[in-house]
Length: 492
Image (cartoon, rainbow, N blue to C red; front, side, top):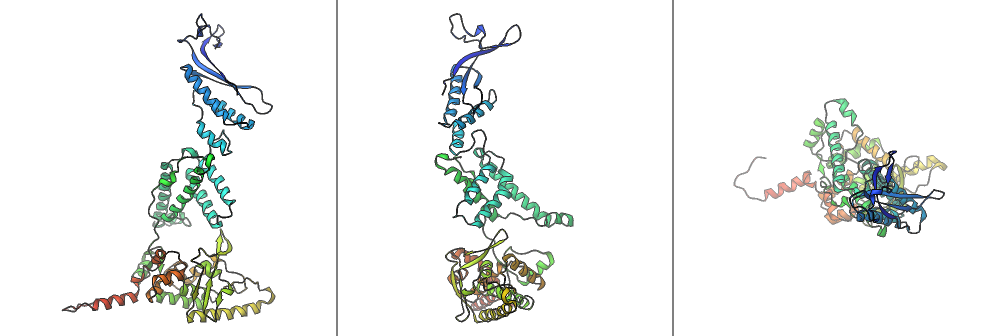
């Protein structure tokens, strides 16, 4: 690499108004020594070229001292040295040096070194958006990453991270940027909620179909960003950043909402105002029974599936993906080993969520009766279809033998709830119902945990926290209160 020369130059002009530059006679004294009071220090450095390109030099001036000019020249040489023996990279760095405006500082060596070691262009600043897209592509190449996890990453990056942070240089991302993103997400959710409560139909219509972002979702968005930035730090000698701002963000609690029972008072308030006491609601046993009666009368194909979920607490995917071989009607046993999940809208059969989800459960006699009737009905469907009947290996299928799409099951459930004029719950809330009824019937927390396939009893406790609102629990409260002797009876 050329050493480069350091010299003085000035802005003096000749008789034709041309700058004299470093040829001004005043720059040196008579003895050839540089004049300390005239001109500014400068340097020039020979630069690498692209194939076929003419010779080029880096010239920078207006330094106050020789040391300042020498230091800037050495900085430029240190940047060029990052290319090692790679001519193409050396030419890229030279392009970058020539693009620096006069008087502006040269790029930070450590920043450029990270980019060169990572195989990124030296002349372009990587933005958060560019890095997240390349990170997502690298995650897709790993077989250990579940498709559902990739979908969550993609959604968080596309919907939230890139719109709010994408244009920021990765090395300049700060805690304040991430805090501002979550504040904006929260403000948007609040605006949607306010619009939904408006008396103006046009305002309500303007947010129809828009989704709010709950605290739990914000925690998942932060987890995606934190993981991506941690990977940028962990790249060994190729680390792109030294600090992860997502690890220093405080968010509202992402605790799961408490489940509540649709008591008579709650139902009346819902009918009057449309208000739900909680996002997670549980039917009373009477309401659940009314739903099963309605489903049996109006949707006999899915009634057995809903009954099984209510009786034994299966997840939607576990019920839809239940193998035919996993149902033993003679011994009243069911083995839960797989589920029908959705990747986007595409149904995919895969293993259950965890080892604790791989479980065996006993059936009540009423459940066995319902499933045996479905088994016989399915045999009639198969006989009618003859050779067109597909062999899915699933216990619950449509009358034509095809598998149920999980989303279609949800849609049919919600339609049945509306038609039965019952207070709304989600299909997943049938699991809450099953857990609550089991607890009310005397099952202990460990039994319910194993039935639902939870790895933690703390999760199961969320499902059973509503038992106090059931009539059976009020009866226990009455009995306990009666044990206390009082001199005078009080009216109820």
